[in-house]
Each structure stands twice: as C-alpha cells, then as structure tokens.
Length: 317
Length: 315
Image 1 (cartoon, helix red, strand yellow):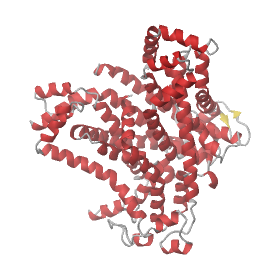
Image 2 (cartoon, chains in turn green, cyan; image 1 turned 90 degrees about the vertical axis):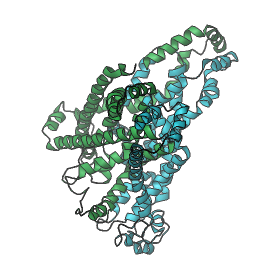
Image 3 (cartoon, rainbow over the protein chains, first blue to last red; image 1 turned 135 degrees about the vertical axis):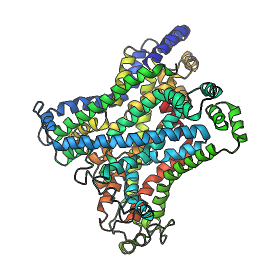
Image 4 (cartoon, rainbow over the protein chains, first blue to last red; image 1 turned 120 degrees about the vertical axis):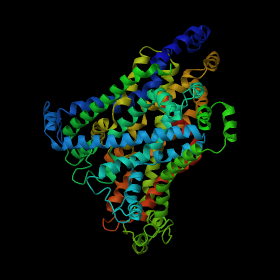
C-alpha cells in the first residue's frame, strides 16, 4: 500500500511540472501543501489520538495498576498478571473462548468455502449473494434473541423439529455442554454468508484460462478444486481467516444477550470476563490486564497469518 | 464431461459468451445437486427470519398450545402494539405480554440520532483525512498513514475500557456525545477505504481547477467529493449499519432511558420478560422493528452493500 502511494507521488511529481507551477502561483506562497494537509487531517488526527492512540497506551498503563474508578489508579507492577496466572476463571475463559473460536471458525470456513464455490459456479445473481449476506447485516443482539427463541427448550422450533425424529428436547443455551457449540453455530449462521462473499471475491480473481487449461488436460472437478482453486485461493483464504479469527476471539454480544456467562461459567468468554471484572466488580486494572492478554493473542494471530500470507503471495503473480 | 466444461465457463464471469452457454446448458445431475444445495443454504438463511415474523404476528398465549404452526398462531398485531406502547396493560396481559412498558419510540429516536451523527461525522472527517493522504504531498505522509492502519489491529475492547474512563471523567456518561464521539472523527477502515478511491481520481480536473485559482478546500468540495459520491454512499451505508447494530459501547456508556439505543433496550427487554412464560411474540416484534431500518436499507441498496463487502475481500 505504501508502495502504491509512493509510485503515485512519483508519477504525479514527474508529470505535472506545469501544474505545480500553476498551483504555486495560485496559492501565493501562503498556503503550503503541508499546512493544508494539516488542516484536512486535523479532525481525524484528533479522533485518532484521543480515542485510539491514547486509550491504547492508557490501557497498557492501567494493566499495571489497581483501579476501582473512584480513587485514582495506583501502580502495582506486574501483580495483575501474577494474579491472572493463578486465576482459574481466567484460564476457564481462555479455554472456553478457544473452544468457541475453533468450532465457529472451523464450521464457518468450510461452509463458506463450499457456498462461495457453489455460487461462483452456478449463478451470478446479486440477489442470491444479497440473501446470503442478510444475516450479517442484522444486529448481533437481534440474531441472539432470535436463536434464543428458536432453540428454546420448551417451545423452540428446533426442539420441536428434533422431536419429530425422536430426539429429546435439548437445552441448547441452558446445558453447559451445549452452550458454547450453540453460540458458535448461531454466529456461523450470522457470518457464513459474509465470509462466503469475501471468498467469492477471491475466486473472481482467478483467471478462467487456468481452469480451461485444466479441463483440456481432462482434470476432474475434485482435482480442479484441490489442485487449482484451493492453492490459488490460499492468499485470500489466509486474509479471510485472519479477519474472521480476530473477530471470533472478541465474542461478546451473543453471550451477553443469551447466557450471560452461564451455566456455571461455561460461556464466560474472555471479553465477557473482562466486562464482568470491569463493570460488576470495578477491577479496572485487572480487566485491563486481561484485555492486554487478549490483545497479545490477536496480535499473535495477525502476525502468524501475515507471515503465511507473505509466503503465499507469489502464487498468482 | 458436461460438468467439467461448466467449471471452465462459469469460472469466467466477465466473458459474455459464458452467459450464453449458461442459457443453453442442459440438465445434469451435478447441476441439480448444486442448485439443491444452494437452495438449502438459502432456506437456512431465510427460515429464522421468517420465524421471527411468524412469532411476532402470533398471540403469545396461543404460541404455547401450537409451537410448530407454520403460520402465525391466532394472528394479531398485539406484539407490535405492546412494543410500540399502544396497547393497554389489560390488552397486553390478555395476550400473554408482561404489561411492562417499553419506550420503543424513544429508543428508536435515540438509535436514529446516534447512527446518523456517527455516519455524518465519520464519513466527512475520514474523507478529509483521505484527501490529505491521497492528494496532498507532505513529509511523513506514509508514516502517519501506516500509524492509522495499525489502529485496525487494536481490538475495540482494548480501547473501550480507557475510553469509558475518559467519558466518565469528562462527565459524558449517559449523553449523546458520549456515545457518538469515539466513532465521530474517523475509523482506520473509513480512511483507508476512501483513500483507495481518491487515489484513482484523475489529476487533470484538479489541475484545471488550480489554474482557475481554486484552493484545496474548493477542490475537495467541488471535485473530489462529487466524483466520489458512489464510494461515499457505500461507506455511509456500512457506517450507519455498524452504528445501528453496535451493542457493547452503548451498553457501557448509555444505560439511562433518555439516551438508551435499541440494541441495549432489546437486551433490557429480554432480561425483564418473565422467565417462566416469556413474551416471545413481543420480543420478536421488538427485534423485527429494530431490524426494519436495516432491512429497508438492504432492499434499497443491496447491490451496493454486496459489492462493498466483496471490495473489502480483494482490496
């Protein structure tokens, strides 16, 4: 990206010698481009510094303090992190969130890849793509409420359907074994179409000639999928996985609406635990320490996938 | 063999002859299977939304006796009336509502104010910043842009705790500025998105304007913004939808009734409904009403939204 910007600047700089002279005349020396840029940048820069940069640094600082919102924070060194290491609820949150991410991303990616390939092969209809995107546009809160109702143990239509094939009602949100898989699948429903569209965009960049050549050689569909589509799609898949995995680790809304961390902590995911520590117990320092850990996990995911991405960049080049 | 040919020509969407081949293609079991699978996906996508509507139109008491009816049970607008506060307590209770009132119009208005303000501010200020990054030359430009992009990596929860403290210290809890401000000036995505489009605008128009004595402010308003109206609309749509759907931040800073937004109100409504016999019809009616603005935007601008999602896939 930085690369294209420089190219552009060079290109423009070389081409517009006359334009530059004109500009210099018109601005009469008072307005330098840097000053103008500063003016244009000012509101965004203000927002960036006040609401992104400063809170990021302050979040790191708060993780080394004890802070209850009423008295000012006081420095306690790494005590929060030591406490965290010995906090079974933190490890539980980490485990539960990981379980959620594995189920959510695993199922979602497979289905979305299948859906994307399917759409790419049989229809160009924007309507079809619109319909599969629809759940993504609806608020998490609404999606959570809707599935909470559909999966209700007494009256939910899912359990009624299961009843038709002789399965006893399942307390999808009320049973500690079912709660995380249920929430993970609810969000598969929500994000599957979105993920499929991202993959679909990647499929469109694969030149048709590649497929034609494979067909000439008499390759089967199965072989074409595994030997051509998947390898050429790998950079896009890596990017899509990065976006979806990072989002998945931050699961909160669905839990907050349906189970509130229960039953017996079985859905107390990291972000819900952070929220709980900060706003039910006013342990802001400790909550910040947990969010530092979450931040590090996400940075790790991004870093690992960026390395993978770079390694694969040459596939289509 | 026929199915193999189909892979090749459908894989080439830009080629016009492939669509002709599309029409002529004959029946094959592979295609039937593919369409069946796709239909199944569409069914799974749409069924829950239908079920929301079906429940919202049912009489809550009657739901208990007939939980699987495909059509609304004892159809009534009672659920919607309860949500919008136009049914009496007796009426509500007769249909299995709790009788608790929900200031839905108020929350609807609040969501409207918050989402509109966020959209207007964020898109405008991000466009200004994108102009500075795409069309002006100044020292340190790439470095500052890179710094902006790194903010994409910071998870929202991480900045939201300190931002909450900041809002509390500023005395902005339970105010509209408190909800709006963190999203008002920019998001890294908005700046990045618009910069991509601004980079592609031809220099010639701009140079002609400069020769006519136009300054950068006039160029921005008279040339850049009108020429980018399509991506700006798209960005505005995405921003509005995100703002409308946001739950976590308003949950932290806007608990009071007078500034509570719809998503937060839905959460409260759900937790107030009696555990033993929840007002499912009322809940679904509330959820549906909260989703209506998004559904309207989707019906009006579906293609734009689909394209923008695909754009973010390839960049």
